[in-house]
Image (tube, rainbow, N blue to C red; front, side, top):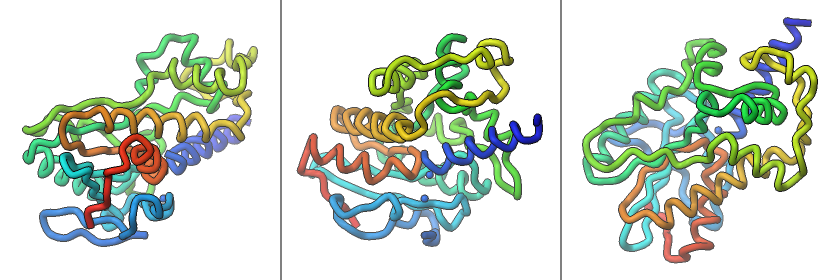
Length: 250
């Protein structure tokens, strides 16, 4: 049973990594390869797909005439060379003055009650430590420290807090059922989720896409965005609804 529960936990974690990741290009020296072409309205989730190999690293570049947006699709587990390529691109763009907007839900800082609500949704608390401990086949867990602190613009965590994520689910579906298992099992362990799994994408992806698009729209400078690959197309559609002047810069 313990082995089954561990497989379930890891399976859900990989599902979340894929949901928040999704053909590979290649890198050019000193600059990350541009993602597949296409206007914003025609971009699909599949075009933002990455597999965590170094050759899948890519950037999508946009402009509204006064500011640039560099969207770099991310994945929670990847080859070290993938993250090194991302760090190099962030360093290059920050030196030009761009701010860095990055994805990070700080589950470890949540209250115990909010951790139980998150665990009711996903079965686990998907922290960076969890992804690092369960990485295999030469992959490592994403460590945002690799991308922070370069000279240039600011580093800004642009994401929901754990409580906001759970609130978004409850506003959509209703109160989360905190099971007896959830109440009695150590918080770092897996429990069977009680949430409606058919509604999780709306919260995990759609709500955060809207939040990110609003932050980009309100920014005063050019920005680099490091976010899960599954957020790319949806965020851009939200952004052009706020400001139709954004265009692809191929």
